Length: 120
Image (cartoon, rainbow, N blue to C red):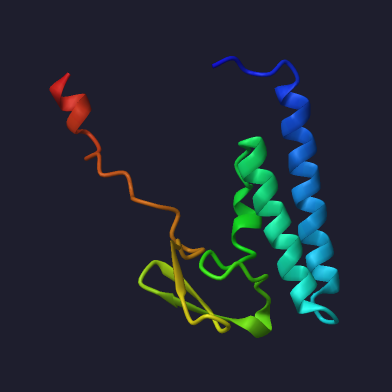
C-alpha cells in the first residue's frame, strides 16, 4: 500500500491538534469534566485515523479503560518496587508503568575492572 506524499505534514498537524486538545481539556476540566473527556476522545480518534502514535506524556493523561481525562482529583498514584500504579477513581481500573527512582540510574556496570586487561 502506498504512503501519502504529505505524510509529514499530516503527522505534524495531528500532533499539534492532539496537544491542543489536551491543553483545552486541562483548562476546561474544572468547569466541564464531560467536555474534557470529549476532547480526549477526539484526540484518540485523530491518532487512529491518521495512524500517528500519541506522545507518551499525553498517553498518561487519560484512562485507557474509560477514556476520562485524569487529574489529581480523579486519580490515585502509588509507587512500589519500581512500578507506578495509577488508579482511575471513576472506573476503578489500574494502569501500571515501570518506574525508576531518581537516585537509581539503572543497572550498574557489571564488568570486573582489570579482567579484560588481564585477558588481553
